[in-house]
Length: 564
Image (cartoon, rainbow, N blue to C red; front, side):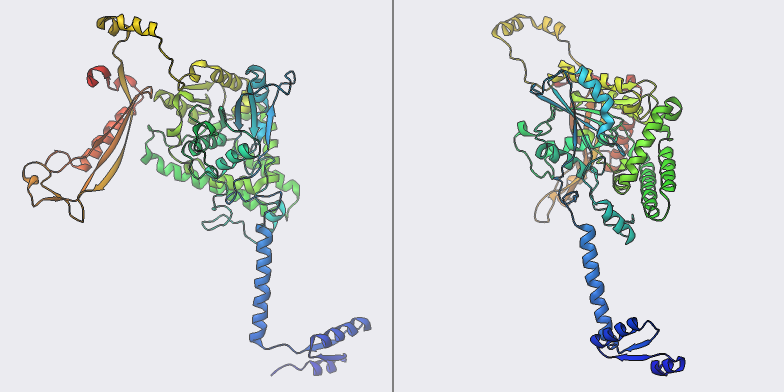
C-alpha cells in the first residue's frame, strides 16, 4: 500500500503542498523557504522508463564532458603518443670569456637519467666548457615527463583522473600502456624537438647517462633507419645522427649483447619488469593518498622510496662514501617526484631495461662508441669489459671507486673521459674519406718486391670473437609443388619431394669487430649426416665456447691464406 504524504502531514500538523509541474514545485519550494517552517511538498514524478532514460542521458553527457576535460591538450600540455613534436627545454653550457658570435660548428648533446633533469649535467658541463675546443656547442635536454618538459597531463588533469580511478596501472590501462613514455616515443620527441624547436640540424656526439644512454641508442637507430620518424631525411648529410656521430654511453643497458645467454636471462628479465612495475604502482598509489594526508607524510613516503632505490648494490654504498652528495641527490629526487610523480612512474613502467629493443647495440659504429661505468657498479662494468673485449665499442673506461651515480660522484673524471674521446683525431678519421695516394707514393709501393711487401704487411691473423645464428625456413618449388630428386642416394629419387628448406644463418665477427663473415648451415636429408636439430645443438655449443672469457682458447686463422 502506497504512503499518503497528505495524511502524514496532517498527522504531524505540517503544511502540505502538491506540485504536478516544475513551475508549481519551484513556487511551493520558494514559499516553504520564505515561511521559515518545515513543510511537506509532494511532487508527481514521471514513469520509471522515462526516468531511467533521462538519467542515462545525464550520465552520458557528464562522461563526455569529463573525458574531454581530462584528455584535452592545452598549450602547456602535450600528447606524446600522438604528437612527438613537443618543445623540450634545453640548457647551453657556455664560457663567459668567449664572445656570443663565436662559430660553433659541432654539437654535443647530454641526456640525463630517470628522475633527473637537464641540470644533472651541470658539473660535467662546466668542465667540458673549459676543456673542449670552442667549436663545440654543449647542450643538455629535459626528457619527456622530467624537469621543465611540457606536461603530458597537467597536475589538475592528473588529479581528476586519479579521483575518477583512471590512473590505475593494469594491462588495459589507457595512460600507462599507450606507449606515451616508451623508449622510442621519447627518442623521437628528443629528435624532433632538437630539429624543429632549437634549430639543431646535426649531432656530432651524444652522451647519455643510464636511461639517457638507452634513449641515445634508440635515437641512433631511428635516425639511421628513419623508422617511424615524422620527417624522415633522405640525404645522409641532413640527418640529425649519422654513422659519424660519436656515442658515449654511461652505465646504459645496450640490450641483448651477443655474449648474453638469452635463455638464462629470460626469467631474471621478467622479474626485473615485474619489480619495476610494482614500484611504478607504488608511486601511483601514493598519488591517491596525497589528497588525504598531510604533505609531511607524503614527503616521508617519498624519502623512503628514494632511499630504498639508491640503496641498491648498483650504487656502491653511495650514502656511506659521499653522504653530502647523497643527501643533495635524494632531495632533488624527492622534489622531482612530488612535482611529476605520475609521469615519472609511467616512464619506469614503460622503460624497464628488459623492455628495451634488444639489438640497438647492433646499430652503433664500434669505432665511434665509448662506454663508461663505475668500478663499484658490478653490472655495467661487467657489460663494459665484455663489450670492449668483443670489439663492439672503441673503448671502455672504468671510473675507479664509483658506482652508478657517475655524474654525481666523479664529474671531473667523466668530463676527462669525454674530452679525450671527442678530441681523438684517430676516431674522426675512422670512417672518413680514404687518403688519396700520390703518383710518387704509388711508385714507391710498386717498386717493393713481393717478399718485402709481405714483410712490411704481414698476413693478418684474425681471431674469432663472437658468433650469432638465427633459424630460417623457406618454401621451394611453385604452385604448391616442391622440387623432386634433391639429395643424395635414395633421397634423390623422383618420388621424394622437397617443399621447404630450413636451416640457420650464421654471422661470425672477429675479436676487434673489424671483420665479419656471414654464412648458412642448412642440413639436407640424405646429403648431410646432421639433422637440423643436431645442427642447432652444435651451433649452440660453438657459440657457448666463443663466449668464454679466455680469449686464448678462441680459434684464429690467416685470412690471406684462406682467401687466396
